[in-house]
Length: 222
Image (cartoon, rainbow, N blue to C red; front, side, top):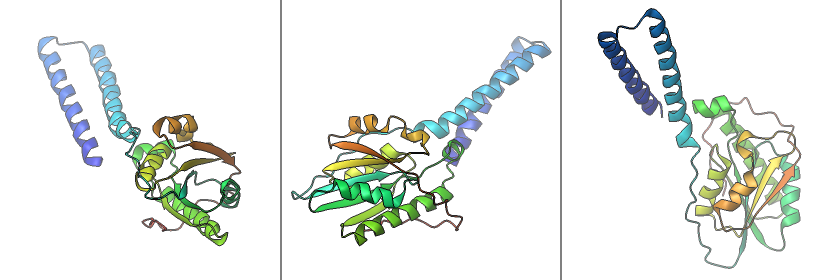
């Protein structure tokens, strides 16, 4: 990503420099004209940088879903890291009817700034901790559960998980008090991306503060 950004900025700057030299040789504009050119150039460079960082990271395409080899029921839970783990487990348990395997995916929750800067170390650690707590609670209740940390986009996390986990239903869990900007209209968008039944639930927000421990590479809990 950094190499791509550097290439785009260098290319854009080179084009603008060439245009400035051409204008200087052919038109010889007044000082005010150069001020306008400088402002326009700054805007163009800013838009080029934002497009390079943002556009590739907001594209979500439906993945080819995994196909179950048996008739077992499987629940895929896409859970906001700020959801209360105990309340979330209560909601999952209430929805289970018989023997159901649960796979918990916790996307990394980023601020706008960290999303653009591709800086997610602290938030990824928090998502990993939340996922491990949820899986542990479910297992202590006798529920077969696995989990992993998703990407920084909830919809992408869902379609990636469906490509490996043959879910018979999907549950989207979001916190009541701390809405995440990438979760707007999440249910409708998720239903458009898969034929698997998708429902949603709002649970209380966890009071657990993001961890200040050093970052580690999250691992799947299976």
